[in-house]
Image (cartoon, rainbow, N blue to C red; front, top):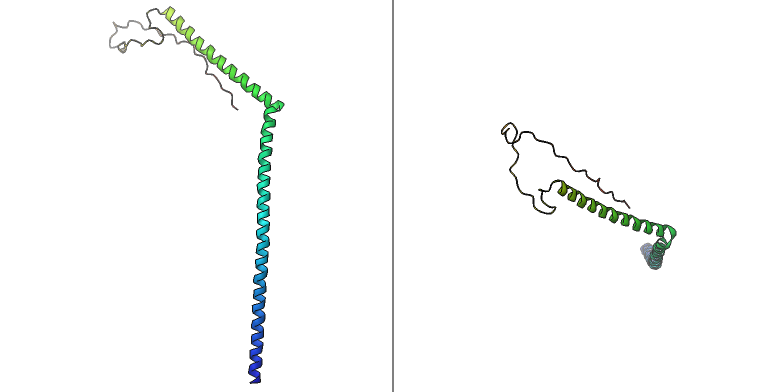
Amino acid sequence: MRERSRYFMMTSLILLVAVVGVSWQWYQAGIRERQLQKQLLEMQGQVAQLQEQVGQLQTELNSLNKTSFKGLVRDANDAILSGWESLLDTVENEVKKAREALDQEQNPGSPQPGEPQPQTEPELDNQQHPQQHPQQQPQQQPQTIPPKTTRRT
């Protein structure tokens, strides 16, 4: 019986040491988790502050770009280019009007610009009706102005 009680005591002692060890590990894990949670909250606060600072610096940089010499030159260049583009549009429209007026002077029977063109019968091939079209003269095509180029930004 003594042997049995010794065996029971050893088993109980080993079981007690195991329970205390597991409890201690669990307690330490809880402490570590709370510390990590605290660090995480602090770091999230720091990240938020840094993002706010980046936003402020970005705003300040944009302001400096607008007021810097390079920014002022860029803005002035854009204004000059838009002025030239509108001037070219105006000149192009005036050239079109002048062409139409010249065409009207050269062909007084043709309709005014903006008037609908009278419909005529389609021209037939000379071989089918040679008496109607004794000799066709090619019409001169008006010169065209090359298309306006736009600036890429």
